[in-house]
Length: 269
Image (tube, rainbow, N blue to C red; front, side):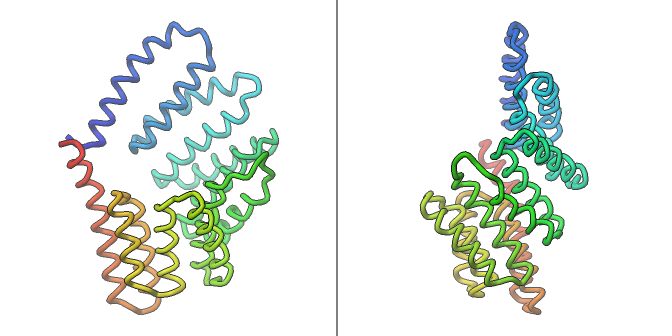
């Protein structure tokens, strides 16, 4: 039995218990919150269709309540993120935009900024780099009640990725350094590794540092990130006509994708 299957069965068991009890709860918002949290839990274990179904249930309840614009916006983003992971990019884009517009109209800053961040990722995955750049820059134009360092760290990381791919090395390096400063401040070793990876690819062309940073992700079993960044490296080296390294990192990416399935089996033992 795979880890995903085991997690899915466990989550389903607890869900049915909770759902039975919730039938006696008269508060619509409590039921909406339950479905919202469940949609996130299903998303985390890649059960996208279940996640979407529960997000839609939560969305219906949140929309009928007063002063719930923030929850409506974040629930829309859960649906959009599932659509993006299913490669349903047109639906993902329109749903992210709906969340951003609602947050802007309601003057709630963080969901608006988060929407721009996620839409930027959606564009980057499709290779729409200029649109990704504009969305990520918009994150910093949103007025927040207080600075949100994790979001700024992640946004600058994505900005650096996009700028490097657009051959804007100086601007990309500025975004990289901003993100690295925050990652060190937050002691976020995963993002430090990710930043070292893109720096090794696009700035220093340092194969040793690149491999060391990829190993950090692999040691934490972050196989999706390891695969994505290995393939990014492969595409860069192919563009440089360095077919030896391109082949190496394409293989690394495929190996990480395979390891993602293998470690699930190991976790269930």
